[in-house]
Length: 89
Ligand SMILES: [Zn+2]
Image 1 (cartoon, rainbow, N blue to C red):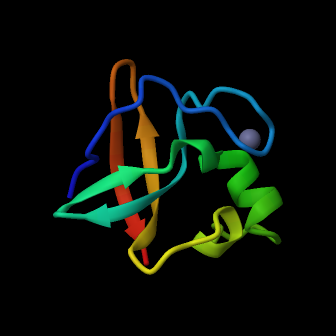
Image 2: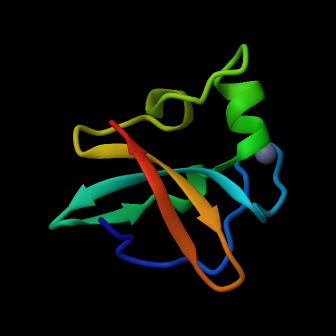
């Protein structure tokens, strides 16, 4: 499944820096696509170390007040796109 929209940049909600490699992006699943909740994106480092705690990937509820159709995506940020690597229910 792909993103419904492709934000040009993602900023980490935790440390405020632009996500340049990979990060966690919550999204609402609707009509077969992911609608990204860009304001709640977190970078790989924050997600793994600060939010996930003890070196674990974060859960959806750690990064956003989740709705029933929401899921947490692990994304890779490339020069001109954001690619969904995996989704965590
Ligand atoms: Zn961060």
